[in-house]
Length: 258
Image (cartoon, rainbow, N blue to C red; front, side, top):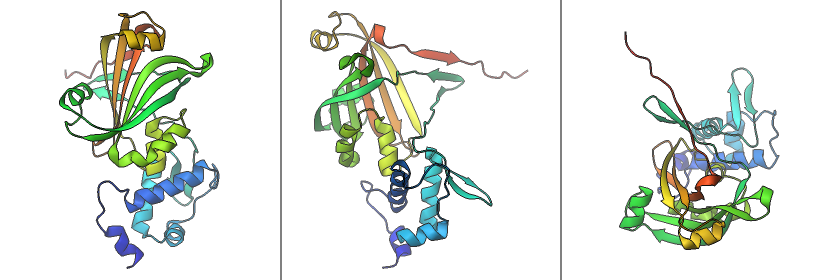
């Protein structure tokens, strides 16, 4: 079978597409220094030959890398490596309101348990996710690296069951956002983040873990990380004592007709 026919063969939803596999390979080359920032990538024709794929597949992969911020494409110049660690900025918009949420970059994951889970009705309702959907749950705390191993929040991270192969990578890189690892390893751009904030009371067990008074106020932040098709790839359920997190909202007046 030719490389081109492989490209168009339907694949199961659980496996990365051909172009996503190529995108992941190229991202790894950039992150690991085999393609340095400022250098040019090979041409589409050269990449197609090197990886045994069609130019259509190469174009789709390069579009994905451009969306992720790793490369730029300039006419008469070529494809330029722009960054080995692009920082994506997300805006959550509701009509004319933009919700800006700032999380300290000093927090890292401390995962204590990993298990497969099928969402029951109560959990699905709390997470606003489909009942019966399957996930890998990574449970633990978020730690302030400036204070040794001091936990600042309790965090449950749910990744879609199709991403189970990323579990070891997530454990090995606690300082990198899971969404960024999904993008890097699977070549899937996170197109939207949805966040829901609610008030909670810290129960006795969590109070002991986070060194805060039982029954004190807390904030629960639930985030959905979605791909361009709207599929939820990751859900985070994080509970902070109220004095350890701040949420800022910036509201802009929409243009009004005369």
